[in-house]
Length: 218
Ligand code: UDP
Ligand code: MG
Image (tube, rainbow, N blue to C red; front, side):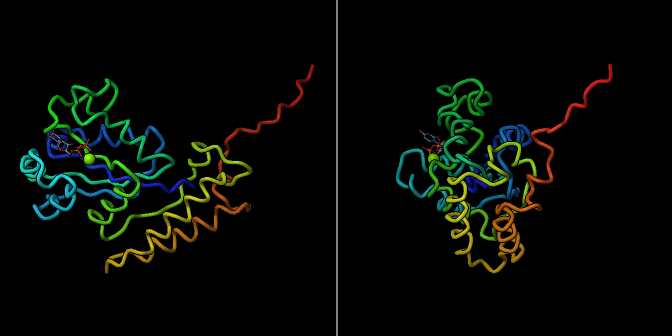
């Protein structure tokens, strides 16, 4: 299974405008998998760490004030290509330069009220996930992945297998005290389940439908 992950955060304006469900819906509809979600009021230290690459830039004080202005909803989404495609779904930093159909294009006007954050690289994503979810994420098998992804013989393709290893290692480095042992166990089970066997989730699913047509009686 594809295990690339990204950090998506509905900013205070998005939360206040009731856009949380809309944003979740877009990622769910695409086929990405939600593996962590929480609402929180961030403090200045957390926001400063999150936006550390922007420290010293002219807009830095206003972005901190903006994110401090109300609760945010942080999420971790998983799937093949989720970092780059998540950014496509968000649109450009400036909502007025964003295509209609993107979140910022559809719901924003000013850069300083652009509704949503999304990691800009796999490395940033892993850093942000650790920052906002030190307790770890929830891994679970999803039967519909066998419909969403093009799997051969009930097993993920080679590229997905390679990604599996990379991200599992990153998870294992988390030393936060609240890191769930269940997470590791389920990940191990998931890895195990990617081997071709009769219990693999894709074997439990009826896609593609294989209905044998009975010859019609004349
Ligand atoms: N921002 C702003 N004015 C700018 C540049 C950025 O208000 O000229 C805000 C905007 O909300 C943006 C955030 O600062 O989302 C972080 O900037 P970044 O360049 O990382 O944009 P993003 O990755 O969010 O598209
Ligand atoms: Mg950015």
